Length: 354
Image: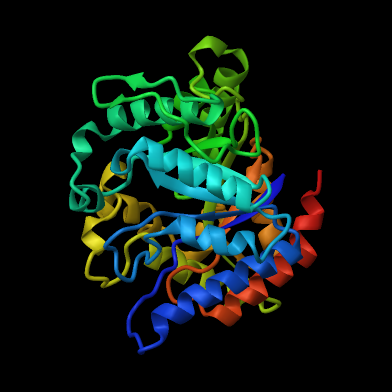
């Protein structure tokens, strides 16, 4: 199993004059520490307008900065909002990161979880899936051709052009999609794409969908794949905190998860998770469980290294390829994030080395 970290650059109030800038600076330091600790992947989401919830509106800038501060950790868009950007610019950003990072780019594609973001950028979320599909098809063609031959669909009529730079990874960097809903696993497999889900669905709930994903990407019609280089990997992300004090870390991790899933007074909280049924439906699965139940169900990763290893093992047993910890979440402090990264790297990751 591989291990990754994910961030949205969350900043719950109250703020000081330096909270926002320090959040980004701390985020860079956290990824450098994660690489040293043995994490293989870093993922950052694209968020717009979501104060407190996610301040990273330009993930390509953060990833570019990290490409010069790191050497081995894979740098992932998690995800680019495909309906909200010109396909030419998406291909250019993906290739540019691949060049700057010397071939470490991971290309996550999605349509956005909230109409609040998509509509604010001037796009119709009702057609987001269809627009996103066409955009991804066009971008893959741009990444794989020496000269893009052009693309004509319902939503795009793109001329033939040289799209530069070209990515280092050929035919293109690994492509992933986000799975807010379990049904997306099998859909991703049928397209030859990697898939990243979320631990608000338990291992038992997710297991049949991982099996369906693996069957689809292994036995499906390869000619129907969007990806020219299939990426047969699945992962999930969940809130995490690790400390030698087991109870302290369990409480911090669960508090972060409750904040993330909607138990907060952030101004825009009600606008989140639209594609997953709204913040109320998402939070219900968390709110109806005690902290001990969240941890026992491996929906949250908290405690000392032994506790976290037992929680990760639940996911390893169902065939998970990548465990992604969202450590910088809710009101978890920078010091707690750095301690978690260090302890997981020292005590947890080696237990699951392939």
